[in-house]
Image 1 (cartoon, one colour):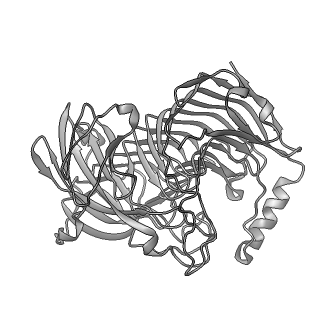
Image 2 (cartoon, helix red, strand yellow):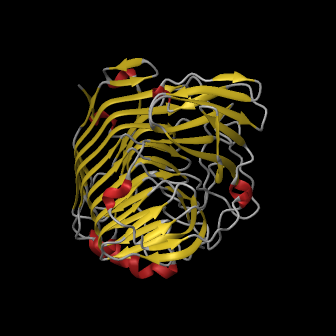
Image 3 (cartoon, rainbow, N blue to C red):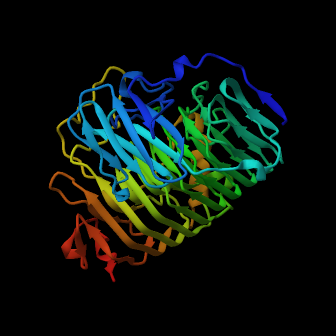
Amino acid sequence: MGDFMNHSETQNEEISVLHRVFIDGEEKRVFPCRVSAIPFNVWWQGRQRPLEQSEEASIVSVVCHGPVCVRAIVSKEFHKVEVRPLSAGIVAEKLGNEVRFSIERPGQYVLETDNEHNALHIFADPPRDFSGYGTPTLFFGPGVHRIGKISLKSGDRVFLDRDAVVYGSFYAKGASDIKIYGFGILDGGWEDRKSMHCYEDYTNGCVKFYECSDIRIEGPVFRNSAIWVVNLFDCENIVLQNVKIVGHYKYNTDGVDIVNSRRVVIRDCFIRSFDDSITLKGILQYKDKCVENILVENTVCWCGWGRTLEIGLETVAPAYRHIKFKNCDLIHNSAAALDIQAGDYAEISDLIFEDIRVEYQPYTLPEIIDNPPGKKYDGYGKKHVPYLFCAENPSYFINDETYKEYDEGLKEARVGKKGSLKGCRLNRVEAVGDAGGAKPTLKIQFTDDFYCESVEIKELTIFGEKISDAKDCKTEGKNADLLRFK
């Protein structure tokens, strides 16, 4: 069975005090995690985010053969309940401090009591026999394992038992044919952030791969990363299946960053991040490599800061093309749900957002990035409605003395080039829920040296109203006339 790693540490510290959960009458183990309590951020200044800006939440994982009955005992007082995503159509019953409801099929669900705070994340995994992946070269059995950074090599197979909590990071460079699988927890809390940006391997997050191919990650929970959670730099033929990203509150804990990579599939996943949930980037180190053939489908996202599904600010690449976000539920959003930032010169084409349900809440707080030591968040009581769709090309540099050479390289790479957006489509996008009486906005704002074709919109619905013309919805930006309704 390869290396069996079972340190047999006590698990008492790994039980949530917020919830007790029973599935078909059987009590299940509930894990704790820490998430962001408020959208309060700062550019990296060599310090981590204060713990008091976070809060505890819970995680429970179960095997779901078919319909199951859930009974959750909640430690705090509450008045109303909601189970997300709303598209699941789950009706929950409140009985005192208990909540009861049924789950009809495998998937990822969130139980919220009164609001999003202290949520219970329920991961209903389908029955899965991983024997087809072969004999594990690393096997993490039940218990707590403290491994630090593990460098994987070609052909490695890593298994995480459902009752395993592994404190570490998986790293590879120039490797191929790697599988990471199982329903255990990989926790990045052992690691301290070392630098302003997340490009280098000074800090690794939960998973960091450079120049790798034929990678499959299926089943695990990634928790408490120090930076971006899943990092893919110049990689190809990557599949993330039923991966759960939750328990992140530290600065720049993006969910998945696809950087100058190709043929990447994210399917049936759950991503709750404190920064962009899924973002496609191009950076100077890999400026000759395209971002292409990307598919994100059947995925639930919760973005606590920034953009949920995003063409990232860094677009240093010849082209972004053949990109599709399909059948996703965006259950909480911050700056924007569907976003194109296009800060550099890539030609972006064939970009589709299809069958996307964007949930709104009346209590969403505004983002504030001015967060020096000791300052209090002052966004309470202010209405904030995240953009439904935003397309723009803000200029940026890192503007840090340590990265002066990088900024100079960016200036040189941009000479004589300008970005463009062609073939962008929104098909069957729906805003659901309640934004406190307000309507979400669609924004297009590009500088004169950026070329943008019209953005095609087909079957847009906002809070039950079918939108067939730009005058029937809220738009913003000097290029808003490029919105074309079909």
